[in-house]
Length: 254
Length: 259
Image (cartoon, rainbow over the protein chains, first blue to last red):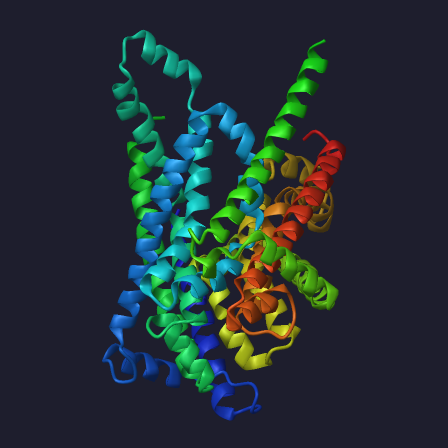
């Protein structure tokens, strides 16, 4: 069902009104403390950023994305391996699962300083930190998925003479891929947030570093502008993942 | 007979788990003593234990814990209430959903924990930016789920009540609120997890109190033992809250009418 165009118009009007109020309040300078910048400043900063006038520009964004993607890949590989190992060996699962659940309850973002201490301000440090968050997401997706594979189906396949290799290739691998796709949006949003977070904490490159420098010099336009760029990237990739997920679902057998 | 055997089995499982922990801590200590691992990252169990002792002895740990729990609770309650109000509104009104929906979906895809630097610029390093961050992280998640829950309410039930003369207020009170209350209880473990993540994250990014700031002091003074000690306390806090909520949830579900 298509939305009525009046609603779309109302959404746009609301967003426009938000920017207008922001501009007015920001330029009126209500208080010294309430530094909210103005949309004009922020967009001017973003323009300058895109042309590389103030900072390293796009290379900062590239580094942040690199950290997020590397961390995602590392975390996913680790998570899948651990899930296959633990789900495939029942006594091990019963032994360690309470500990895994407890570790998952820990606010993992608090581990960032540990990674900074150990690995310094390198790209690897950020990737390791990102992977430490992603590993839990992919682990639980695959672990619960493996547990939910229909026993009857497996028995049928075996009776029909499937080899172990065939079962892995035709049953397990497609299933694991499916769960990874399903958990991809969650992992992605955490990957990007974690990468920027740890950059903000300690770094000399990346979008988080831009935010941190902006905050130190009390430049609200820089902070808001950089965060806006990150938000737009996050939303664009998320939209792409939604499309991908939909395609993957079309292909998945009922 | 079978119960006795299963009890023996569970004792054995408990012993195995205890042994697992002992072996793990033993290996950790051994690896730290022999310098097999990066001491900056892993510290050692004895150092962590000493750090835990000195932190709790000086009272820093308890003040930090108090501050963290306070921000967590205040932020969670406000975030949950705001999210409920928004979620019920857009769940009930198709038009409001059409207008606000795209904005909320957009906000949901934004990594909101990164908004903290802006809030700090506004409010300084007191508790306000932390609470605001927790609220921001929670409100979108709660609103989206509550709206979906409200839309899922059985249409036939609503129509039946309408036919019997129920007005909008009656519907909200007797149909939608119970449905929403159920969601709040069953999702509490997830939402509190988010809130704790946001609380500690915000304390890390520049605060003068709370567990997160103890961790960040540990980073500045290169004390990984302090970081790990505080992380352990945060873990115990997280697991304790989780167990408490799980117990509450079981009670709530027992009382839930079969719908």
